[in-house]
Length: 91
Image (cartoon, rainbow, N blue to C red; front, side, top):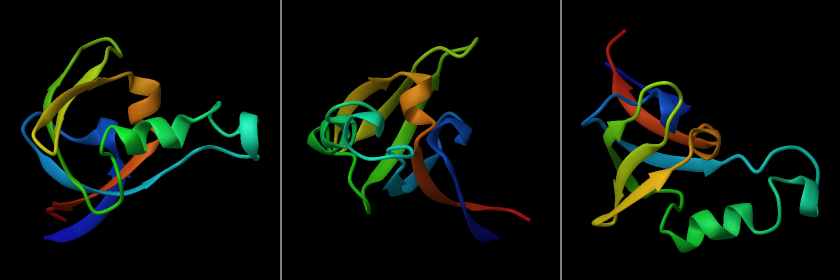
């Protein structure tokens, strides 16, 4: 078993991981994921070091339901793909 860094969208239902970083995208300011992208996620409790558990991943690129700090959040797949997490995986 080893630790791997993957996007939040790659977690399976019921799997728990630790937030490593939020990829705001290239550029600065407004081009970097829109105004307040990282700030909004931080306000929802998605900060580096936080445990996040996937409750349900909707099919056909739908939203992902997660538990963060005891609260349930629904994140769009595009946003969840930019949240990098560390998880233990075989192989």
